[in-house]
Image (cartoon, rainbow, N blue to C red; front, side, top):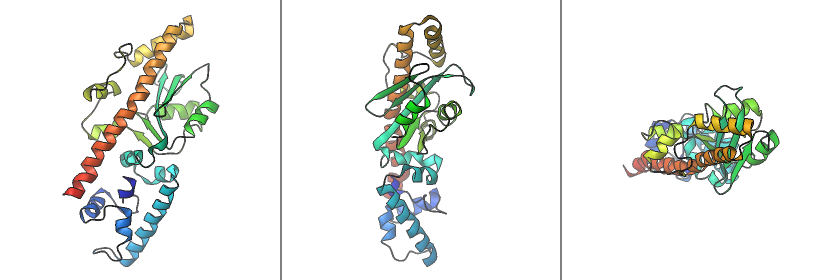
Length: 255
């Protein structure tokens, strides 16, 4: 989808991009192979050619930071395919909602392996950086306003400057609103029965049981609850990408 994205070029918005698609300029190469274009001055064409060649060079190098800076937040979902070889699906647990509420668990699912970092055990800046530095894209649910700011506040410098897809927003565009678990139910995504009906309040309670009473069962259940959050983000991301590509790109090309 990135190679179809003209919004990376300065001055190109969603409407102009759709117009290019409908006119047959579906990929960057389609645009670059055209010597003259109606309604586009020679100077403007030359500027856009340079910008698209630059983007293509960065895409060949899988330079995530380049696209994090140039793809609008609303369209970050477009990065999920071409830059999706190393996605970090991330979710955190805390004791509260303020920046000073300690993070108790950070879960990171890389698509095949689950990493669980626990406060007082293996949750520290070194481990966070070691895992997140390999990520080409970050995926969260409501992470733009909660998870990532919390991590930045308590573990400064650990969040890499790569595209961040906060699924809450693209899924809202698809008519799916509410919390993560509500959206999962709407799409028929099931959780393990042990944590199916757990809430954030339950997660806080489980942490207190572990912290005050040393209940290993409580900690294991908390980790499982967090893992389900992370793993299900992958299915939601795949759904959001396919659905938004069809809505924005496929319909424009086929019209």
